[in-house]
View 1 (spheres, rainbow, N blue to C red):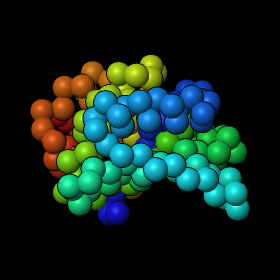
View 2 (view 1 turned 90 degrees about the vertical axis):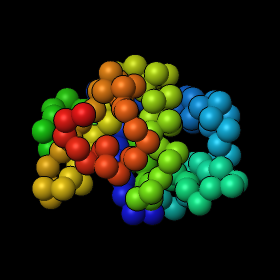
View 3 (view 1 turned 180 degrees about the horizontal axis):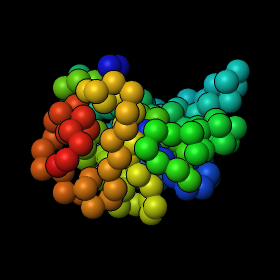
View 4 (view 1 turned 30 degrees about the vertical axis):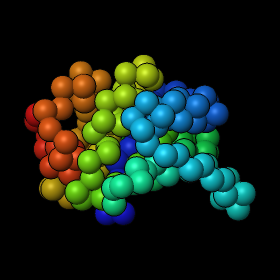
Amino acid sequence: MANSINIISKEYLNTEELILVIEKIAKRLSYKAIKSYSEEYDVTEIDLFRENLNNNLNITFSRKSYYDDTFNNLYGINNYGIMISIEYSYEDIMLIPFLKEIMSEIPNILIYNEETPKGIDSIIFNKSQVLNFPQKDAYKLLNTPSI
C-alpha cells in the first residue's frame, strides 16, 4: 500500500453498521471482502479485492478513542473526526467506485486527504464532488484540490 485517505464524520458512527454497509457495497461492486479484528489493538479491518486484479483496499475502522482524538484536530476543517482510513495503491482502480458508493450510502461524511503534493495540508471532498469524479485515477484525483 502506498497511499491513504480518510472518511471523516461529525459524529462517531456505529462500526457494525458501517461494516454491513461496506460488505453490501463490496457485493454490489463484485469485490471480495475479508474482515479481521485485532484484539490487541481493538481494531476492525476489511480488505477488499477482486480476484483478477492486483489492487486491494485496506479499510480500518477507528476506535471511539481515536475518533475523539482526531475530532477538531484535522487540518483545514473543524467539527469532524476520522471514522475510516483507507489504504490504496498508486495505480488503484477500485477506490473511486468504492468512494462513490459509500458517499451515496452514508450521509454527512467527507473524504479527507492530509497527504497532499504540498506536504502537510488537506484536500476535502464532499458527496457532490466524489459522485462527479470524471476519472478513475485515484492518486491523481485525490491529490488535486480542484476537480
